[in-house]
Length: 282
Image (cartoon, rainbow, N blue to C red; front, side):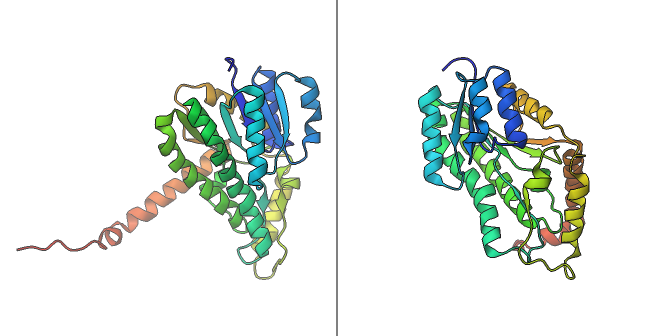
């Protein structure tokens, strides 16, 4: 492979994924840009015919994932960076979304990540190198009421990634969990699904959160272009982080939540330690 890395990015039709694909291509990297509707990537294919491969990819379809990985390796000879970015949000208190909505949320946000990671690992292992970036969220550390299923998928991505990082370090594979906060994309406008069984009298938090998302649309803290640049900087750094909060809201929210947890468990230290067996004495 040439000196410039090959990036395999999911969810490049809009938002962070699109900005990352464009930024990487502008910097001379080779990019496998994937989307469920690859026709939306036509402009990238025309502008960068030698360095981009556009591929149809539904991350919930394991066979499709395998085909996409194979196409990437066939085109560029390998993959250096895998970015799991595809995902969306599901609004609603725990009781409100339908079973189908809940399962679909996990299929994309969690099992989609699992599918791409598992299918790309044989290539990365054979190279003894690679970098996996799993896009979680500040909400992978703390949760909002009426957005619990989204957080549940992102909490799961966090745990999976922490284990993966330890499993693959000796193989030369690095792992970073990107944890963006509010980002100025179309996510809040188009990437959040409403619950099918809304109960507004019992769960006013759903209406309040929807209103908050509405108000914040277009005013989010982070610039997706800058996020793309930071991700590239991290990949090129000697010691990339496992956890990477992105945005003032994410950074401060995670810090506040960690402080709260530390205080909470410290207050219950005696109870926590009291559950062990008493040591027998003579």
